[in-house]
Length: 587
Image (cartoon, rainbow, N blue to C red; front, side, top):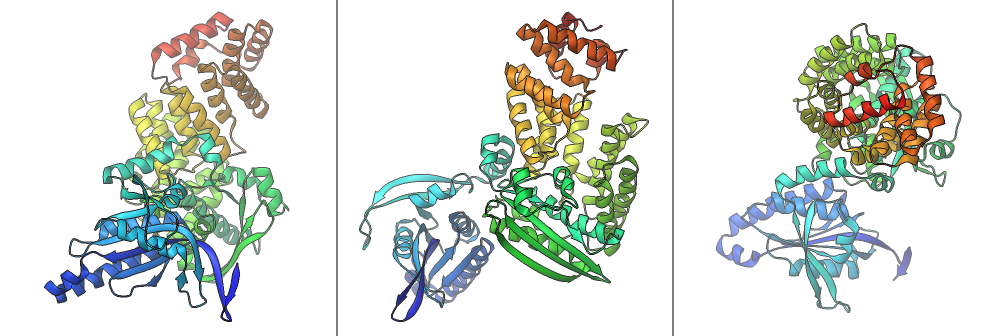
């Protein structure tokens, strides 16, 4: 909203304000002027860096004070916490943070009660401390890893109403990493539903040439991989969005079908050593374009494109980066041009979901690993292709494929840029080896690294089920189906089995029935239904399911099936096999 004062255009808006002041500055200057000035210069550099990196703007740094504004409260508080952690002992600052109305002049200066309250809060803080208003605490919720100590209400100078304020302190260092993982690993399906959601539609190309299409797929999946690392975002899996390739739908139609708020589209053209790319972010609810950008870059800048686009998405959707996520998302690696070409060709092949294409993808990823040994990407993707061969039955020796997958994954996981993809592969292999503690640990690490990954989450759900935690498994599978609306039948089977274990018969029946609709020859879905129908006393349905299993798999035996089931608790498996035998299945 704009107002006119003395012939000048002013803008009134809501903003987060950070006000800071050096404690005991005059006394320090009197004692040692040179050292104090040097400490102030160093402190100003810290303020400027942290304010800008948290999407804030420095308004003033007059004398020993600092004033900055932010679009969101999470940015302001994150900056304040990081500043206090990085400032040395030579000069301590009091910081106040408030969320309120400001008046902004065309030259960028700001006024108003919001600024005044932030300044009053600053005066309430201890040296080295942070005072925040109740509005800030309420706005940031769990999105900033901080603890708040309620100080009640305080009447402050020139503010008509008392200010309710809190002391804000950073969570302990060891707790921040655990909290980051906890937020990603323990969030519920309801919490997931409240997050901003986005789908990246396959990018269009100027021609159907392999080089053009591979580049488009590579850039798209690279952006997908970056955004999958964010705990504050729901990103629909590539397996679902691939179905929208070459479909003539508006962003609004695509968003409605996938149940997302935003759709990211792109058009890519390669001309010589240059990449020309147009990317648009669309609001699927209103049908309006949020922003569009045109890029014209040298090919060696392709990875920087991924960073820029992902950062624009994060800013537009107001996604708060948790501690440590920034470094994992905005990565700069694989500078070797040939390695990048092999990576993008490998991605293009693996997106086809076919046996021969998977082998071709592996050849390209092996070249990435050879040409860019400093990166985990090639290693992780080779591991995935071996694991995918075994998972999909594309190999004569699943055991050998799993063994090769483990060898490549174990090389990728310890690397500095490891992003969780190798962890997912290794977690499943640990489960197959009956190494349940390791399986659960590595699966949770995968989700902590890739909170919105449509591959890491369902595999964690599967491991939770076999580890005897069906309630958590069921919720994880619900989350996974939100991330991958067009998912594989086994998602439904794990959900059905988990619900069966906790007595949620109706949801178990519905999930197993949906699995059979997706894959009519699925045996595991029928086994779950047999147990549920037995529990409900539906003898007719049990007889029908037994006949179907006999017809589909004449040599089926409960003992052979049980051998392949990696249950942690042997008693659970014995109970299930007893139920199946009692229903009439052959031993």
